[in-house]
Image (cartoon, rainbow, N blue to C red; front, top):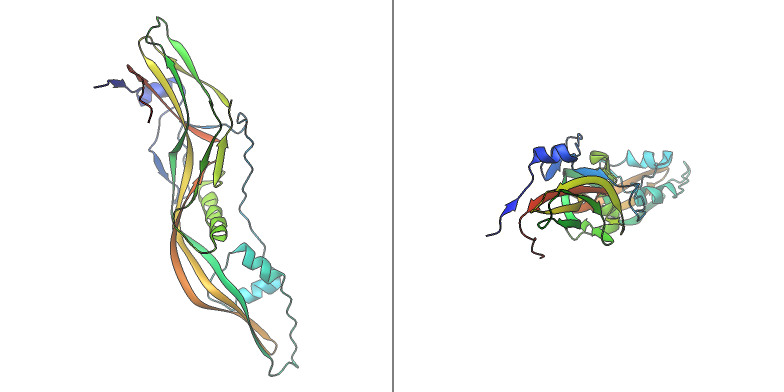
Length: 269
C-alpha cells in the first residue's frame, strides 16, 4: 500500500498558503471569505480572459409604468429593452379601441435559493519534483504546463437558456463578489512566485484548481401581452410557470493550490 505524507495545514501556513478552508464555501449570506490557498493570477495569466459583466438595462419611465400594472417581477434585460423601445401613444378620444399584443414567452425573473463556491472545481495543472535521490531540500514553484479551460453551464435543460444564464450570473456575482464567467482559461506559461519545499527522499506535487460558483434557484416564465384599452395600457402575464435550475459558473483568474508530499509517484488517472 502506498504511503502518502500530506503536508499539514499548519505547515502550509508557514510556507505560503495559510490556513485552508472547506472545499465548498457558502456565499448566500453575502460574506464570502476567500481561503488563503486561493491566489489571484490576473496579472500573471498569459491568457486574457474577457470580462462577463452582468447585463443590466435601465427601464424607461414608460416601462416602469407598465411594471406597476403587473404583480410579477421582471428583470430580463432583453424584455426590458423591448419594452423601452416600444412607443405607445394613446388618446382620450380612442373610445372603444382595444388591442392585445402578444410579446412572447419570456424568462421573467430568477429567484436564487443557494449560492456556494467549490474552490477545487477543475484541476488545471500539476507541478512535480522528484527529490527521492536528492540530499538537499529543493524548491518547487507553479508554472502552467498547458493551456486549460474550465467550462461551466446549466445543470438543467430550460427554455431561453442564454437569458437564464444572464439572470443567474448576475445574481451569483452580486452574492460572491467574484469575477464569474461560464468559461475560465489559464494560459500556458502562467507562473506564480510561491515557493514550496521538497525535502530529500520525497516527491512534491503542487496542484492548481479553477474554482467555480454553484448557483441554484427557480426561474419564472410567462406569456407576456401588452393590453391596450382606450387610453389605458398594461401588461398581462399568462400561463406562468416555475422551473428549478442550477449552474456551475467558473471563477476567472483565480487558482486554488494544494501541495502534498509522497514517497511514491502519483498514479495518473
